Amino acid sequence: MAYHLSDRGRRALDGLFTAIAQINGASRGVAHQFTLDPTAEQRLEDLQREQVGFLNRVNMPSVRDLTGQVIGIGTHDMIAGRKSRPNLPRTPRYAGRLQDRDYLLKNTTFDTWLPWELIDSWSKFPDFAQRYARHVAVSVALSRIMVGFNGLTAAADTDPEDNPLGEDVNIGWLQKLRLEKPDHVMGRATVTAGGVTTATGAAQPIYIGPNADHETDGDYKNIDALAYDLIAGMPSWARASTEHVVIVSQDLVDEKYFPMVNRPLASTIDSGRSTSDETVRDIIMSDKQIGGRPAAIAPYFPEGTMMITPLGRAGATDSSNLSIYWQEGSRRRYIKDEPENMASLVDYNSVNEGYVIEDTDFAVMAENITFGDRPEAP
Image 1 (cartoon, rainbow, N blue to C red):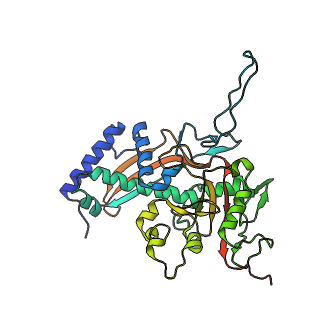
Image 2 (tube, helix red, strand yellow):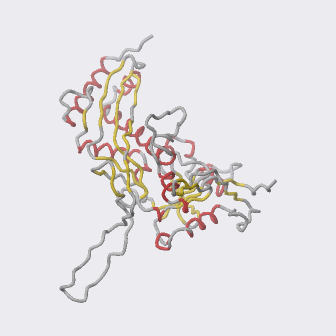
Image 3 (cartoon, rainbow, N blue to C red):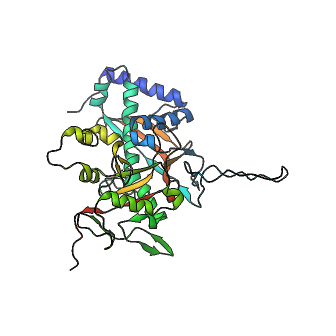
């Protein structure tokens, strides 16, 4: 039997539609595509950062153009100097670290539908509009993180069934490092095509175990040794940074600190939240360390993987080495009742955006990490 939206739910939706239209100057109403007002656009970005903790540790700058040079946020060259005579020209230097690398933004859709049953349920709350905005913001934010860690390509037509983690939505941070700095990637073979070398070849597992011999094909006795070796592979100026964070998958942390048998819940890295919705939304910072650096578990980070790079401080907007660039004025939206679409409210969102590593010198990663001794060659 078809579900019919209640009068109370209809009034709540009409109020939501009116408020969104007024804020964005959508004279024809929200059922027609409109461009978000710059203030509303920034408010949506801020709301996502507030609702999903990991985005609060990532730079999210707006840029004017679809393509351009990477800004170099959060990394700094030497700018101090002196001239012996007043008439000698002074030469200001960029207070960042420009590299000869470009960004390219891709139009990305974040379309959601909510059943009228949920709208009716929420309509009894006085904060209906805020509740709805938070729900959409969390959905968009988690999708951005998922693509950031798992995105491999930017397909013309994406297929969520074959690529459930957004592998075909955009080129994420890990893939950026494989493509742009292959010598900073362990655990995968390099491939050279057209004179360009990338770390996109076959998996080359890194074995970690008590009997592993570091001198035999790069194995390690523990993940601390692997982390130290990764950091040692950075240039000296990057290696010395005090901002590095070791982003790891939950399985690596469990293996190092928390045996799965007879572990007290309170002794886990996140006090038992690893199975909760909160962990899916937040970055979990540990008081433990890996390789002498703080350890962090991020949502949707691939298993058997470790990335070391500076992450932003909570609340700071320009201190991370990981960024999501989005184009000013590119966000389009329209919201419609679609009874034919499972009796639901459908919210169509799109924006031009892309994933950027500000300075690849400050990023290293290892993947295909496997616990146990390396199998003997046949």
